[in-house]
Amino acid sequence: MSLLFMVIATTLFAGLAMAFGAVMAYIEEMNEKWIGEGFEHSVLAFGGGALLSAVALVLVPEGIATLSPLNVCFWFVAGGLCFMLLDIYLKKINTPATQLAAMLTDFIPESIALGAAFATGSNSAYLLAGLIALQNIPEGFSAYRELNTNATYNPRKIIITFSVMSLLGPIAGVTGYLWLDRQPDVISMIMLFAAGGILYSIFQDLAPKVRLENHWGPPMGAVLGFVLGMYGFMLTASS
Image (cartoon, rainbow, N blue to C red; front, side, top):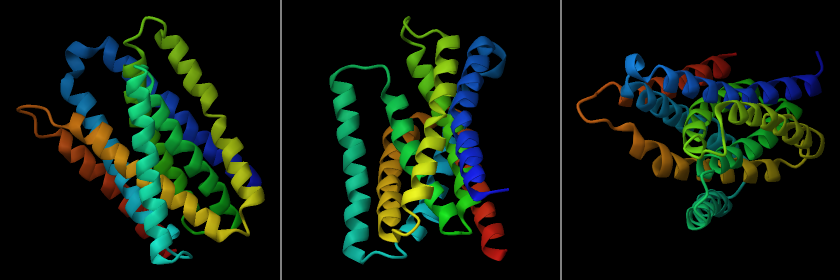
């Protein structure tokens, strides 16, 4: 099986996780009485854990491999600042697509980095693909709930839109695979930029929504999300 096919398959799989998250949100919405409010918070917490593991175990370790400390700091902070400015802009124009924009700004640079990781033969390529998929599920869940508050976006339209957007993954992944395999510095910049943006998103969008009064289970979602990424990292490191 060619590496190019694997890039297309893994990025598409990771992208379809957005639609899967939207389906989960739709099911939760239809069965809210018996599923309970804690389910949403647990899903968001799990996403936060998965995102954090992607930052700590893949994006930052890979990103710091070829750059100087000052460059590492610059690109990491630049990612956080750009995500912050985008967040401010979207709030200012009062769009119901804040979570959607955040999801795509995570997914596209990560898919580019994933394609480049396959091209360079990095052992973390499959781990990164899995972590992208894991984080896209709760992000799709959250983006669906945000869009569904607007009458313009019905559930069917949202799920179909997310499915179509998954094609951005293979496009970005193939771009990274074909043009960035011999530019390790650029790959590192992209990874650190994405890591800074993701860390901003965790504490801006996900973490504040996790806590639920008189419920102690949701924070364990973050622990489970991170430990799953850590387990995958350990398997990759030992192979």
